[in-house]
Image 1: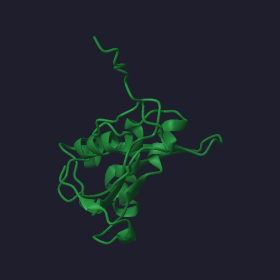
Image 2: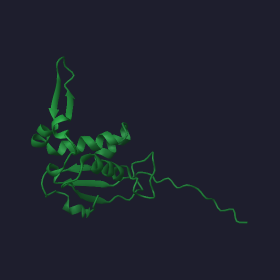
Image 3: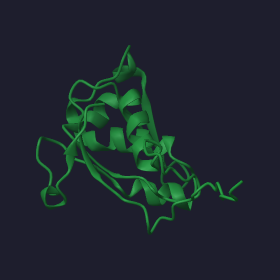
Image 4: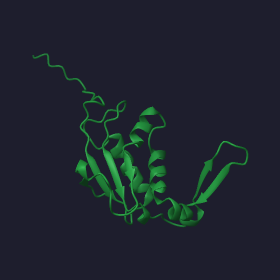
Length: 147
């Protein structure tokens, strides 16, 4: 009998093949969209997924202002920020966040679904969210993906 070694191959971050994807957020539910984006950023959609290495792909999200919430979240959901000074807590309702910074709704939802480590912060840097239909990453030749 042959002595073949059946070993699990761990892909390092340097050897990982990375692709660029474009996601259209028009009429997408924020949580479901963010969960799928976080999975792509981690690399869980690839057979070469390695938990301890950043093997994920780049994701570009367009039309961030057209994302939607279910139920009464536009009125009830609040985003909390704190300036680290006494009385420095700021509360922003989701409807106000949509008018001021629509890209932050998706960015914060995805960031909350990534690991809270150096690796998670590295993965979050591969997310690009834009208001409108245009993005400056045409040179990377991103593939459109339906989520």
